Length: 97
Image: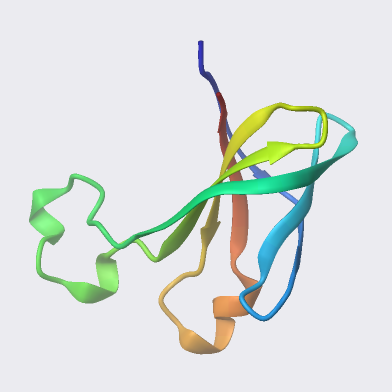
């Protein structure tokens, strides 16, 4: 059964596309063994009043990852709307599957 977490976490990302390689959660480092899936969320978050306003869209990259211990988590990288701060976005641990 999925476990909702929904909290900001510290992530170490590497490579040209800055994919996550580990994250801190519950006082320990979780090393990522494999990125199972990656997708972009540019939706409006279900708020129909914001539809059509591009600056109010979500700008996040989502990852489903397997850690070295075999656990599967979903992480989101919130990039924000400003290009100059895209690399400094916040990471959120959404849930454990």
